[in-house]
Length: 332
Image 1 (cartoon, rainbow, N blue to C red):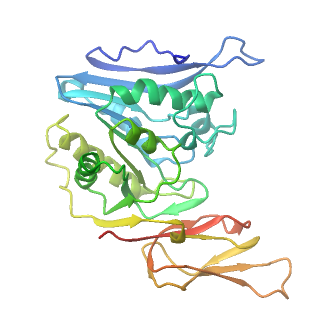
Image 2: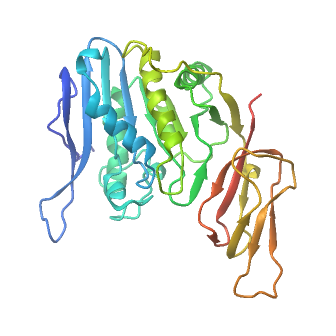
């Protein structure tokens, strides 16, 4: 079945259009209402189509700000190609400042390829899969750690197994110019946006640029500079002489579940590492304190393998099974 989402914007029209996708959402207070999802299309010339999204998780802000500023300032006369930009793709989650949609509890980055007859989250994923991605030559979805995690800022790509596609993605990631480039070589979940773009043979990137449910100034600057370099890399704009050229990134990879540390019990977590720190196998990740039972010893949490700490839990209060940290290792 085709999508129920509609828009008055014209994907084939030249110039700059700002408006919304409309997702029908019939509720008590609005029988014929729609969920509006902000979108901009900027087109001119014969270059490629670049799809950019943020707000897949509503509490991740660097991409939302950078893409909003891009739509506000971009001159269509400077574009050779087409930009399709959605700064708050999961608009209900972004409005609520939550990772998941308050309407159906859906995690948009665990919803692909989606369902046109499903809830709002599944319907958005289906529209991306069946309408937006087929228009795109390149796709980037901007993320951060949200309210529960802090990340070392990096651009990322997820290996597809297609050497030509992966090579083009790595070239784009290097052109983006973030200080770190992470390759997700371990991808058990087919419901991710990058898993869907891989299935469709579309070059795609992700990236984690902060966390803690707030805006990282460093992460925002990396995204803004990276966008200019990326658009120049694909020929949509001329090289920005005021934008620092990309420096060689430190290239990392994540290859399995043993890169992650999960809480073994409830309590208050005291970390013993910092982002960017090199650790050895068996090193202390931290300890969990049973603060309501002072006689009980703290419970150590350990890393299984050596690596670099790229992610840490942000809230101190933890429950058994929460991710406390994860590592990456130098890419070989």
